Length: 218
Length: 285
Ligand SMILES: C[S@@+](CC[C@H](N)C(=O)[O-])C[C@H]1O[C@@H](n2cnc3c(N)ncnc32)[C@H](O)[C@@H]1O
Figure: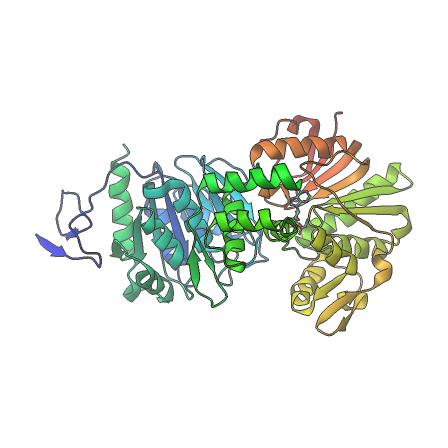
């Protein structure tokens, strides 16, 4: 059994490679949501993930991706085509539901409220971005505390780094795309600098992780 | 909770729900503003921002300051409210107003009463004024614009916009397919775009609180865009009742492009006229 140690020390988050049939990640069914951030160079990774997870995938996936401000339509459709499940942009105060994939709408920040619903906000841009990944991640971390998984993919700015820190500080699980695989690695690298990242994974490994995670919910 | 400080770094403030409750209670009991039912996630972010801007180490510090200097509340309100706005935000919506909504109202009415609820620094009102001028019906339409925030209303009345915002406004105007160029309506002076004052000379800007204020008039068209997103569901229900009551039967209500009435108790008193642009019509009293 070959062990690859992850950036984080400690036994709990140690990934075991090539260990067929056994759980690679110590996972359980206490998580309530997954937040996924990405920017420049993340589209392929996102579509690969969305097309590979089972359509019965249980946890809600909340995506915040940097996108063109004035293109209100099209993006969600483009993602839906590649996805095993429909992707929707939540309305303000929409309730989060199991098994759904959500995308932050253009020109709004997407916040997660206590009590499992979304709120939108037009407040100032953060890291030059609206939607800002930091805001979605941080509000989700505040609401879900340790029952949240944050995943950050390729991107050209540091948006998301402090959101990942908020997730970690609240006891959640943090994953970034392996910078070596990223088209633009600034985003995952900023997160690695800002906080402890539990797993540094390639997109195919993120998919494995999610599939394995989902088994705990069946 | 994180936000950017002056040095471009982030500061974390640990803000508990109980801190927020103490703050809203104080402001409600002593200062006439009621934020108790604002959406928690954005309200918390705004409070964090105030702690940053004024260098408070905790919500307690902020509360103390309000107690020693009551006038400070106005600044707090100004920072709590999100005033970010654009001219011709969602250009396709403005085309719809020009091509269908206003003409429809004018089929049955000689004049039109419009209320901009939560008008912020006025961009939405300026857009409407330009639209009406281009339609040649300025004289038939009465605009009333209200907001909770005194200082943002003062800004709206001045009708000046930072030049850096004009690029976006121009782009929106082009997508709106106005009949002129936007630059026809303003001139640049010392880094600000000064709007043609005749555009808003008949607009009435007033302070009005959607939460605590009453019904003050009846309208054919109410725009309340990107305001109720800062409220929780209960407060949205309450405010929607007031908006409903402020509309003539068959009047139009327009909300922001990512808002929805479907979770509101009195949604059945409206029908959807245009779902994409979030235009509703009151069909029951
Ligand atoms: C984001 S701006 C919306 C501006 C414009 N309608 C738009 O869509 O671009 C929200 C405005 O709502 C105002 N507001 C917040 N609470 C309010 C209340 N209780 N009563 C009236 N206005 C309120 C704020 O002061 C702010 O100017």
